[in-house]
Length: 119
Image 1 (cartoon, rainbow, N blue to C red):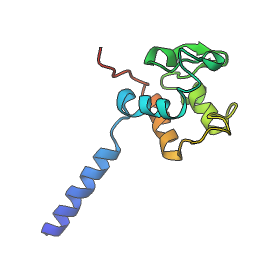
Image 2 (tube, rainbow, N blue to C red):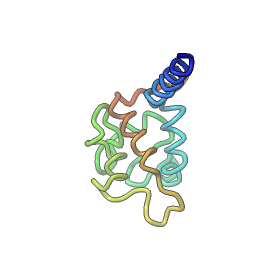
Image 3 (tube, helix red, strand yellow):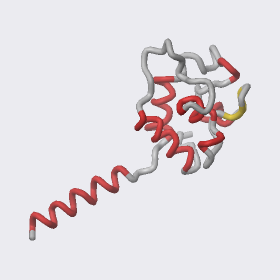
């Protein structure tokens, strides 16, 4: 009986941890820094996209907004990583996002793309 309770507790904790909503500051911003900021910042806003801060994500670049809250299918950030638009990061980039990282960004956008930056 104790073993069963222990397993239920452990699986319950794992499930609630994986169900946590992605955070802009803890998850998305580090993702953008790792894969995007080299080409999409105030210094070099390729295609009109500046990901230095949250505000830049929702401003339209040459192809539309990078992030459209609750609409990943209209968000250029997702489209470029999943084959719906010109592939980003480019082929020459040293690192590519994993499926799990792309899913995290998609989930964040689907859940409203909230800004949790401390002001």
